[in-house]
Length: 288
Image (cartoon, rainbow, N blue to C red):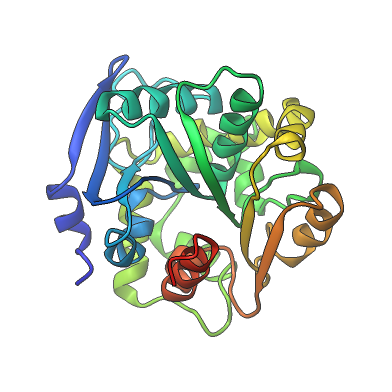
């Protein structure tokens, strides 16, 4: 049975990292699987998938720095590099030296930096496999929404404070598949995930990953081109941000990548199609 939003957070743990209280869930048994969520939500995106995956893997599912229930009392803007450093230390704290990765959205960018460090022999753990979902792997083919551009702009902090649940829900609905619209409860859970413990102000801090993607474009593209891993991309093609149009580019840039195109699914495979996404993931690992 999938945990409710409150059950998820009441049963999690906290890891202190450089003044941040990082929330994370861990459950299951078997090889370690790090599950990295996307913008602007939290680890709760994976709650439904976790129910099946925990039967095959030991899951480590953190809220990224400044996201969800990971408290950022210093109100620090946290970079992709900070996120990787934190996760590396969390994995060491939990005693994991080898793990699989499942990432989504900005989580894909974090995975790309991990692959870069592994390629350079600078990663603190061994990656066993890497599966990505709808993310801006190549900034040239990422189509951010207007609200994302506004948050990134000079008036971002004001825009963040003016964000309201009704408008947020409409924006979210616009990047979902037509037949995978969410219930009122799901929309409420995503709104609560997005606000998290750090509130609306954190939205304008978090969005700066989009600038990092521009600055580090070649580094992160090369990370995927040079990796030894057979990377799988599970993509909701109806996503206007990084859907089918992005996959067309990935096929050229990353010829060794396997791409699964899920027609009718939008930006959030973990929420819109958790069972199908799990099935593709398990097939990739030859577990079904």
